[in-house]
Structure formats: structure tokens, C-alpha cells
Image (cartoon, rainbow, N blue to C red; front, top):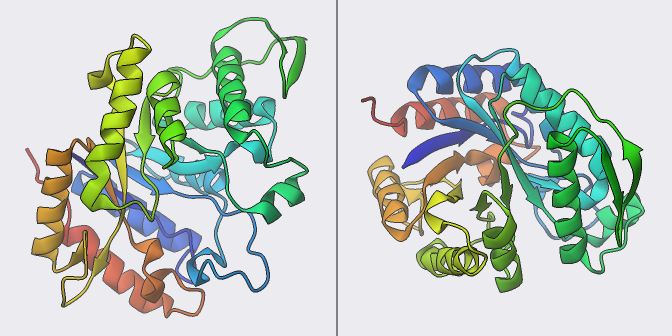
Length: 299
């Protein structure tokens, strides 16, 4: 089981200095990866919660951290791919892979918030088919000298896009519906769970991904299964990854038994930490304590 940690990207504690402190200390402690997430807009009066009210851009944040770290991997879970063209995203991610010297993991999602689609000038309909075409274009731009494409959603005249990312970043897909899970098994390098995934039954979703991989002639044992761990340190046990440090570590081990290959602790989703009105100093105190307490065992 590989253990990661989310950097501060949501709320009052999401400052450049705090990102740097968390990422550098995570690297020192032997964490596998630091992670960010995306929220493009927050509609006025929306009930999704204050954690999404103020969120830093993940590509810019990870680019900043690429220059401040040396070994730790950099992941985004997830970028909602319909909001920009595949050519633009391919260029940005290829450059991030270059400046990080090959440490990038790309999580992609289809998006779910209608207001973000309207603001991006993209319809929500047929998101799944759009996503499959999008992933195909990304991989072709990253690997082929000349790319020409005319599809249902996107069109490219014969073009070059260089430099190519080396190595090609792994693509991990999000999604919770059965069709999304099967898509991950068919075309992705792995699957990332959502913040609201029921971790008690996550093995059922893993099984769907693996079965789809087998049906596509792929080896399911080569896929990565990444858990976004909505981690909350509390005096009481209120569910998976919530409670004492001992309880949280036991929950991580249980997720490994269910088939997860990686877990990253994300404190951004704790309202006491990721809220725009939270005390940033107290958020950092709690996060740095958790970073030390939940660090992976050193071999």
C-alpha cells in the first residue's frame, strides 16, 4: 500500500507557503505522492459545502511544487476534462511532466456541476463518449509525431505537438457509476475513488473495474486503485478514515485488503480545515500533526 497526502488547496490554509511546507515535509517523511483537486466555480447558494468555496488551480499548484521538491510524485484527482480542449490540456500536462522530471499522475473526470459546463461552453450530454475521445487524443498527442483527428467532439488538422512527455503520464479515471468504472477498466491506467465513495463497499467497485479490464484483454493486476481518503482526526469513530490515528491506520490497512493499491489522506474535505473561514494556523497545526502521525513506515 502506497500512502500519499493532499496539499492545502481548499480554504484559508491553501497558501503557497503552506503548500510548500506540506509537500516538502511529505517528501522527507517518505510519502509516495502529494495530491491536489479541481473546482472551477462555486455557484451562489449551492449546497455542496464550504470546502469547495475557495480552491486553488491544481495544475498551477503542482507546477509550483514541482520546483520545490525532488522525488515525491505529484497527482491531481481529478481534472474535469470537458472544461478545456484536449490539445491545451495535453500541452499543459506534458510541460508539467517535463518540469517535474516525470513525477506526474493525471486523474481525469467528466465533471458533474451544470454551472461549470455552462461557464466552459460545453454541454453536459454524452460526457462519457466525449471523455473516451478526449483520452484518445491526449495519448496520441503525447506519443505520435503527427496527429490528425476528426471525431464526434473534437477535430485536429495534421499537427505536431512537442516536446513529448517522458515518460507518458499515467491516466487514472474517476467516476462511481458502473459505466464509468467499466470505462476505467477498458482504457485507463487505474481508477480514483471520489470524496463521497462508500469505502465499506469499495471492493465492489474495484471488481467492476477489473472485470472490464479482463473483458478488454487487459491485465487487471497492472491497474492502480487510488483512494481519496477523506481523513478526519476525531476523538470518536464516525466511519472509515475518521477517528484516532490508530483507527485511521487500521482503516488504511483494511482498504489494502479490499484491493486499493494507494490511499492519500485529504484533510481539505474536513470543514474545520478546508473551510474559507477556518483558522489557517490551526489548520496547519492539525495537518502537520497528521502528516507526521500517518507517515508510511520506512523500510
